[in-house]
Length: 407
Image (cartoon, rainbow, N blue to C red; front, top):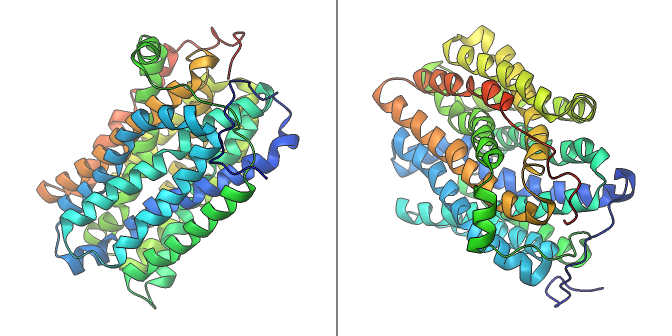
């Protein structure tokens, strides 16, 4: 069996097949996405314990998530270079190894600046997954099944938001937060080893990120619209999630274990919504799906910042369902705003940049307002920002590159 490091590059595209023939590839990529996503999100339910041990404030805690997003900023400059040399499959394996290895130092770090450095490294490793995973799924699976295939892959964020607080709530009763991170590092490294040996799919080269390719993608108005829309979805989801434990503990009077358990159980709706979304997207299209979903998510986010404890679980259920269903539609639309030959470039540029805004700037902004005013003010402001989304989707043009060749 060929190692992912063997020089087997090819510009030949795989022949797209129905999802049932590529299900194993999609599921394995989804598992790697789960590993990398929980590696990032596990810090949110552990943050109150990290704040207490390291004596840091809410603003500093929010900036730690911004450091993860800075790692994503490096991805566009590394992803194309890497996939042009070791194919998308090789890049996916490298991503998994970096995630596992960058978690290990958290068992020993005592200084905040070192914590920030390895947060950047973790962000880089996790960010390398998405461009290659999106390019692989879009190339391996026929377009009529994209909604369902992307829904399987995009069920991982809501599943991670469920698993991370529950894992933290369970383990933190028995071991320190550093040991929780080490346990996940071991799981990540084992998964990286298995994928390096057994992984399939993605055996084609990506486009190197050069000035000509970048100019071609950034000249497309649809790319910028999708960048902003993804930032809204990620901000309402990962951005707010990162600060929910602090919000619930400091402003809604919950203890940490109860807050993490509530967050985990309330977000179960997102997993089911993703699969329903795959069917809906294939029926009514990406644009209509995004309009309805973003409007629902924005309203729920605003009321989440206002509501008292009895209504919070209901709002979390609705908001999680809406935003989880948004992501497969958004990534499907992103794959259509650029020619197929530049798809790996658009997916290398768009999601990392959106992640910086949604999962970096948004929690840092909420943390800042938590220091100056209240966490509630920050959450309401993010919800108001998301209300722009449905209007933006209305001006989005899709489909002009659907008949062009390439992968």
